[in-house]
Each structure stands twice: as C-alpha cells, then as structure tokens.
Image 1 (cartoon, rainbow, N blue to C red):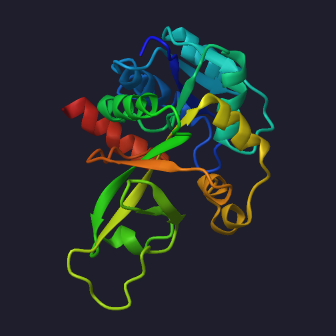
Image 2 (image 1 turned 60 degrees about the horizontal axis):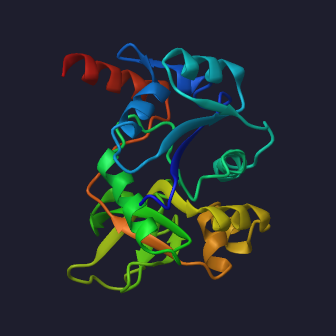
Length: 247
C-alpha cells in the first residue's frame, strides 16, 4: 500500500454537554483520549495518527503523553468537518479514518480492515462498520442506536434511528445491524462531502452519513463483532476505570 498514505484522526472536543473535559478524564491513570490513541498505535495499516481538537488543554494533554494533535477551528458543525480541516493540513493523506475519540477499547483489527478494504478499491468513496443484532435485541427499538440496512453487495441502503427494515410480521432469521460510528473516506470525497449542504434526510434523522447517500455516493459496510462501547457519561467512565484496574 506504498502508494497510499492513510491517517487516523481522533476528533476531541472539550465542550461535551453531558461530560465536559471528557477527552482528558483519567481512566486507570490515563486520559481517555490516550486509551484511544494507544489502540490506534496498534494498527498495522495506519501511516499516521493525529488528534483533532479545538482546545489548547486537550492539545497539551495529548502532547504530554507523546501524541500528536492539530488545532482546528472551534466553529465546526460536526466531527467530519473537523477531520476535513486536518486532511487539508496533511496533503499527503490519501485516505482518512475518522475514529471516535471516546471509544477507549476500539478494535485495532477493525481499523486495519477498513483501511485494507478502502485502499483495495480506488473507486470506493466511503466506508463504515456495523454489528449484527437479533430482532429481539432491545437496541433495535432504541432511537439512540443507529441502524443500517445493507444490500447484497455490502453497501448501505439507509441509516435510521428507527428499526430498519420494519417487519410487518415476524420473519425468521431477520438480522438488524447496529451502526458503529467509525468512518473511512477517500480524500477527495471527504472534501466534497463537507462542501455539500446538510441534506433533507440528514436533517430529518440527525445522521450526517445520509448526506452521502442522498448525493449518490456508495458507503461500504464492514460487519464486525467488535462492540467496544463509547464513553458518554462520567458513570460509564467510572465503570471502565474499575474494570481496567481489576483486570
């Protein structure tokens, strides 16, 4: 893959409504963002890892553990816009993986699989991942859990907070797919994506990946067993802290 240069970008904001300062919250003695960084450094197919932040405290915290951070504007409407600014500052980057900065147990092998899949298909603009779920999983009906339905070629048909497909009657063997918030972009497509205005379906569902589908772009979906949870609240961080300290 010498002709490609793939970077992993971890967007990290200070101003989370539910958990201000989350990226620097200590879990088992290390900042949350360092746990994610350490997982990314285990990847074999990332040429570079960088944290994208709009806060000098986070930048200083990342540099303190030996990581690399890039300051971005503080007015970005989404993490995707933030990583696009980073991509513009790293012109050699051909592919960009948007890795959630609050998933301290993200699977390095999944990230590597996304990179291989993207760089193996030069025409593929975007890639993501999903977990299979059975129809009786409570997450199917949870609007906080994003679902995706997939065609026979492994491409996303639609993303929704509602159960998709909707079963009018019980269907044996029906599988639902829980979308994971990790994305890979081909460089030129990422810059095109953020130039488009938010689309109607995107605004309806509050899911920015629908902007790509509405503009006719393919999104490949990699199926994974990785169910590493994100940290959204101090309580979740405390539970993980206890688990890591006793493991």
